[in-house]
Amino acid sequence: QVQLVESGGGSVQPGGSLRLSCEASGFVLERNIVGWFRQAPGKGREGVSAISRDGGSTVYADSVQGRFTISRDNAKNTVYLQMNSLKPEDTAVYYCATTIYGLTINRNEYDFWGQGTQVTVSS
Image 1: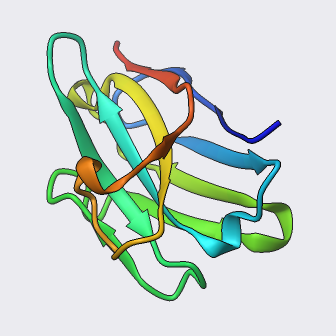
Image 2 (image 1 turned 180 degrees about the vertical axis):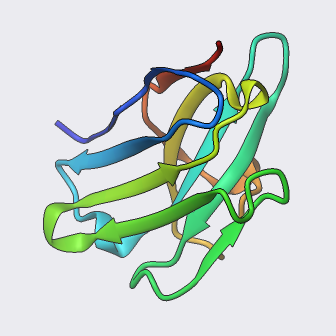
Protein backbone atom coordinates (compact mmCIF):
# COMPACT_ATOMS: atom_id res chain seq x y z
CA GLN A 1 0.00 0.00 0.00
CA VAL A 2 1.38 3.38 -1.03
CA GLN A 3 1.18 5.76 1.90
CA LEU A 4 2.86 8.26 4.18
CA VAL A 5 2.39 7.73 7.88
CA GLU A 6 3.16 10.43 10.42
CA SER A 7 3.90 9.62 14.05
CA GLY A 8 5.40 11.19 17.14
CA GLY A 9 2.76 13.74 17.93
CA GLY A 10 1.43 14.28 21.41
CA SER A 11 0.95 16.78 24.19
CA VAL A 12 3.84 18.77 25.60
CA GLN A 13 4.35 21.82 27.78
CA PRO A 14 5.67 25.09 26.36
CA GLY A 15 9.41 24.88 25.92
CA GLY A 16 9.29 21.16 25.38
CA SER A 17 10.33 19.04 22.41
CA LEU A 18 8.87 16.44 20.09
CA ARG A 19 10.21 14.55 17.11
CA LEU A 20 7.81 13.74 14.33
CA SER A 21 8.43 10.96 11.84
CA CYS A 22 7.08 10.54 8.33
CA GLU A 23 7.55 7.02 7.02
CA ALA A 24 6.80 6.05 3.47
CA SER A 25 5.61 2.65 2.42
CA GLY A 26 5.06 1.29 -1.06
CA PHE A 27 7.44 3.72 -2.74
CA VAL A 28 10.97 5.08 -2.46
CA LEU A 29 10.86 8.30 -0.51
CA GLU A 30 14.35 9.28 -1.64
CA ARG A 31 12.97 10.17 -5.07
CA ASN A 32 10.88 12.95 -3.55
CA ILE A 33 11.26 16.27 -1.86
CA VAL A 34 9.40 16.04 1.44
CA GLY A 35 7.65 18.81 3.29
CA TRP A 36 6.04 19.24 6.66
CA PHE A 37 2.88 21.28 7.00
CA ARG A 38 0.52 22.10 9.82
CA GLN A 39 -3.06 23.12 10.27
CA ALA A 40 -4.39 24.71 13.41
CA PRO A 41 -8.12 24.75 14.21
CA GLY A 42 -9.91 27.30 12.05
CA LYS A 43 -6.81 28.10 10.00
CA GLY A 44 -5.42 27.11 6.65
CA ARG A 45 -2.67 24.58 6.13
CA GLU A 46 0.74 26.27 6.27
CA GLY A 47 4.16 25.13 5.25
CA VAL A 48 6.64 24.45 8.02
CA SER A 49 9.73 22.96 6.42
CA ALA A 50 10.97 20.95 3.45
CA ILE A 51 14.03 18.90 2.60
CA SER A 52 15.70 17.99 -0.67
CA ARG A 53 16.06 14.45 -1.93
CA ASP A 54 19.58 13.99 -0.57
CA GLY A 55 18.95 16.01 2.58
CA GLY A 56 21.53 18.60 1.62
CA SER A 57 19.11 21.51 1.36
CA THR A 58 16.33 22.59 3.64
CA VAL A 59 13.86 25.42 3.96
CA TYR A 60 11.90 26.67 6.98
CA ALA A 61 9.04 28.99 7.69
CA ASP A 62 10.11 32.09 9.60
CA SER A 63 7.91 31.07 12.51
CA VAL A 64 9.93 27.89 13.17
CA GLN A 65 13.41 28.89 11.98
CA GLY A 66 15.94 28.09 14.67
CA ARG A 67 13.55 25.89 16.64
CA PHE A 68 12.68 23.09 14.21
CA THR A 69 15.05 20.86 12.27
CA ILE A 70 14.10 18.65 9.35
CA SER A 71 16.19 15.64 8.41
CA ARG A 72 15.86 12.39 6.54
CA ASP A 73 17.16 8.85 6.61
CA ASN A 74 16.67 7.47 3.13
CA ALA A 75 17.77 4.01 4.23
CA LYS A 76 14.74 3.99 6.55
CA ASN A 77 12.47 5.70 4.02
CA THR A 78 11.72 8.28 6.69
CA VAL A 79 11.82 12.04 7.20
CA TYR A 80 11.90 13.63 10.63
CA LEU A 81 10.94 16.96 12.14
CA GLN A 82 12.66 17.76 15.42
CA MET A 83 10.69 20.45 17.21
CA ASN A 84 12.29 22.27 20.13
CA SER A 85 11.23 25.23 22.25
CA LEU A 86 7.63 24.52 21.40
CA LYS A 87 5.07 27.28 21.84
CA PRO A 88 1.28 27.14 22.23
CA GLU A 89 0.98 28.58 18.73
CA ASP A 90 2.67 25.45 17.37
CA THR A 91 -0.44 23.49 18.28
CA ALA A 92 -1.81 21.92 15.09
CA VAL A 93 -2.20 18.75 13.11
CA TYR A 94 1.12 18.15 11.35
CA TYR A 95 1.24 16.55 7.92
CA CYS A 96 4.03 15.38 5.69
CA ALA A 97 3.75 15.42 1.93
CA THR A 98 5.84 14.79 -1.16
CA THR A 99 6.59 16.68 -4.34
CA ILE A 100 8.77 16.07 -7.35
CA TYR A 101 9.07 19.79 -8.05
CA GLY A 102 11.27 22.33 -6.33
CA LEU A 103 12.25 22.75 -2.70
CA THR A 104 9.33 24.74 -1.39
CA ILE A 105 6.88 24.98 1.49
CA ASN A 106 4.06 26.04 -0.83
CA ARG A 107 1.37 23.45 -0.16
CA ASN A 108 0.02 23.75 -3.69
CA GLU A 109 3.19 22.12 -5.03
CA TYR A 110 2.62 18.92 -3.03
CA ASP A 111 0.46 16.13 -4.32
CA PHE A 112 0.70 13.20 -1.91
CA TRP A 113 -0.17 13.59 1.76
CA GLY A 114 -0.20 11.65 4.97
CA GLN A 115 -3.09 11.61 7.42
CA GLY A 116 -1.47 13.83 10.03
CA THR A 117 -0.47 13.69 13.67
CA GLN A 118 -1.73 15.99 16.41
CA VAL A 119 0.68 18.21 18.33
CA THR A 120 -0.65 20.08 21.35
CA VAL A 121 1.45 22.56 23.29
CA SER A 122 -0.19 23.64 26.51
CA SER A 123 0.58 24.19 30.14
